[in-house]
Amino acid sequence: MLFSTKFSIEQIYHLMKKKVRHVIGISGGKDSGALGIYLKDKYPSLDVEYYFTDTGKELQETYNLIKNLESYLGKTVNKLEAANKSNEDPFDHYYKLFGGYLPSSNARWCTKKLKLEPFENYVGDDYVISYVGIRGDEDREGYISKKPNIQSIFPFRRNIWSEDVIAKVLNNANIKLILGYYKSTVDADKFQRIEEIVIEPISVKFLQVQKLNALLDLGIKEFNKVVYQFIKEKTDYPLAHTDEFPLIDNEDILVRDDIFRILRESGVGVPEYYEKIKFEVDGKVGEYARSRSGCYFCFFQQKIEWVWLLENHPEKFKLATKYENEKEGFTWNQHESLKDLAHPNRVAQIKRDFLNRKEKEKSAKSPYLIDILDDTESGSCISCFI
Ligand code: SF4
Image (cartoon, rainbow, N blue to C red):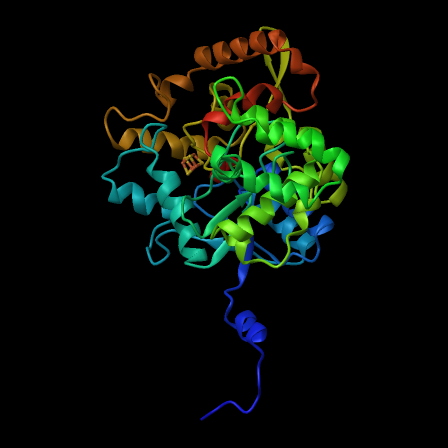
């Protein structure tokens, strides 16, 4: 049967166009939580989906944060689970499947199986913009997935684009094209200054990052407009399939203090494990906290965080120790078992070392211990901790 309604070519094109999904992964950490709040408040027109990949080994504080976020966002945070047909929780399912080998920084099957794969299954082949909460005061790149239908955007940074996009836009082969885009975007005065930068090829004397910063210095919005135009005309990134992208006008740069402010002012609150707790050693009083979300036994934890777990969640510490006892020679920490770490003399030593380190740290003025703790974040897992 023929359709009686007549559509124009343009209407048919729009009907056939695949929808582009906008998603944020909520890890239970401060940055992704704040990003959810920030995007809802600043870009209410974006229809954002929220998801949380549950390993089955999270702390209760993570679920509390998600519940508070759901109330604020007025939306469900979709819970994704790897091996959701298994009788066991996702971590235990794969732990057994991998023959009882604990994950480590060199063998991170947990991130792949428990975080990335459920996310990739969730989005399927849809075009997806994945917003990532790497802050403006962090010097690290992050990715959620290498699948071509998933594009990462970093709204808290001055440069919202991922490394692969920047490499394409600033490629020397595209100088002429980019210059043309700028010409139609900025006024003649500004164009002269921008032209000098655009025509200088990237080389060992003029690195990509220098060129990027020089262009951003001359206008974040203008740069974003040029990148968006390039994406739309020359690539098949998910953003190429959008009609508009409000974040190209975004000039905000958000740092750690902004994250805590957003969480507090929204009423969602800071995840409880970031709050400092007092401890005493050799008559000296110190303070400790946890610096990250994710599994309670995560091997990225620092020693003082294990002591925090021992003293504040002893039942979880006991469970973490149980895994070590199941297979000879496997420990969460390199060179030290949790049984040895839990010895009172060792606990006192770890606290002493931490206090000494803290005294040396210039950033100790911060109200949050993560200033001291999270210097290892860069080597860890953005899917679990952001
Ligand atoms: S939090 Fe740590 S242990 Fe858990 S999935 Fe992430 S990297 Fe693995």
